[in-house]
Length: 213
Image (cartoon, rainbow, N blue to C red; front, side):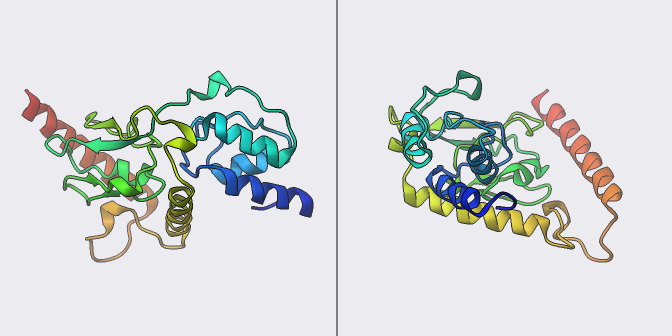
């Protein structure tokens, strides 16, 4: 966490440790760390985290000294936790979900079907909108349990560690996307990579449409 006074940074750290670490962005910030910083600097409310739910708001209220508030409807609802399920029969191996998953919970490679490693999935849903063939769905895995009743501190800590590793890997110099791991020779320029990914996806979509037809 960067910026802010020492006291603000300390508060942001405590807030961050109390968040569920699903990295779902429903709070309106790119990750849990950014949301924690926003709360500490009074730029965001403590009631913007649907995965944490009412219990999460109570925890944040105790840390910040702010009053307990209802979950902000604009950020979503407190619901049971779900995990992503990939219909492998329709997966075209485009790798877009691999890029979107904040905890590297999806396993697969270019042009090959992918699968979700359920214990690592936080239910963030970020993989769903990027799938061009709509082969990803959600499955309720906690019944009627929501918020922190559906998610443990141990799971939150593991998710935090996996997200930090994911971010470090993606931001490291010379990092290559999943679609180039099996290639040899010079690393293509970014524009070339985008053109290649686009052509691969278009070809895969054409095959999927033919198959469905």
